[in-house]
Length: 210
Ligand code: SF4
Image (cartoon, rainbow, N blue to C red; front, top):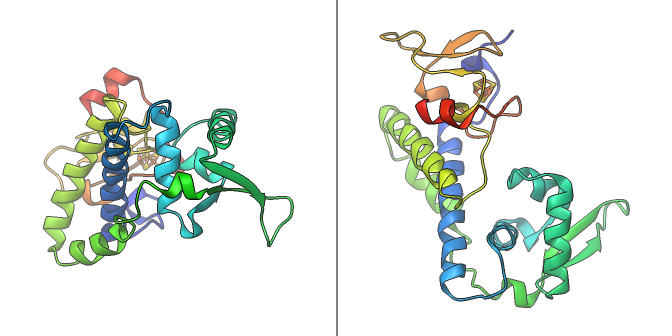
């Protein structure tokens, strides 16, 4: 097995941007709710907010389901509702007729695009931090994201801290204090994952302890 720390994964600055973007997504969804867009539920809000951050303001249903960590039928249902409200429309991909893309309509995009440059701005800002500062920020972000998940502000992300394979502080006092049972390997805070394909959801109580 390949240890998680050595697995091919996004560099630390990229994971920081991903973490900040998740928080930004939650904030933007909240702003929409505060703006009183009645009749648009939290998950519908998250789909609209996610689409706004996508290139061309469009994505496939499976991508939306994966990014929001919901099942495909759930994503399809939400998109159907949004289409009925005129906030999104479905169209066939130009490159592959079998693929259906979901696009924001003008009405759906109306909530503003002022924050579309967030990822680039954040990427530039995070590279200004020292390696240790980046690790500290990643750890803090994981904690914040988990808290927002508990409040139902953002969907459950596939992070180490809420994974059934995660054993925090198994090797206390070492440079790699945590352990991944799946890969049977130790790893440190700098290797904490925010979106691991091998993720298996842990019991809520275990995740909270982690
Ligand atoms: S999310 Fe789970 S499987 Fe993936 S590296 Fe972390 S502990 Fe291991």
